[in-house]
Length: 215
Ligand code: GRF
Image (cartoon, rainbow, N blue to C red; front, side, top):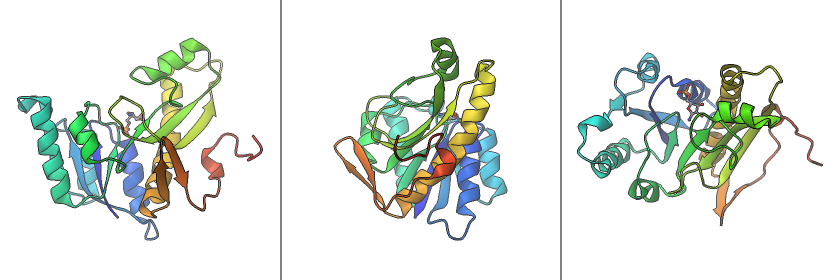
């Protein structure tokens, strides 16, 4: 399945997807990488793997709508059937979200619906919650909302700092994102109301803190 990946920065989730796609058995291929920020590391990662990329700098557009429309045009031209937001830090408008209904997914570094928005790890630590993790979900109009495909969880340690926690969550993200894309490309995901159903799902033990199906 041809996929597009949208980034704004470092691109470690992009790298995880690039690595997965290099596996012959993996059912997806990245056809194009899009960045709204010029010169970022993620663009270099794409280039190193021979994946074409497009930079559409949002600052050069007159309006949010004009930027979104240009993105839609270029993404559709790429032939991508799934659009993956991977650290894409620009809010996309309703028209964009509706255009890719149930084929636009995002990764967020918390266990949604807890801790949407920004500065997540600071908030997690301040709140005293004992578990954090990441969520891959379909994108809806409301920010960090939408049917959840997969979550991976880890304990918050007593001596955690936002930086330490962020780096452990990021590692979890890489596995979770590849798994979500794999399920999607295999055609195993359906969305009913707000629920994602994965057909013939076996529990992916390695990316769940508590894989015991009794809990
Ligand atoms: C990740 O934590 C992702 O969940 C968030 O932004 C970060 C991007 O990291 N939306 P990277 O660019 O993939 O390294």
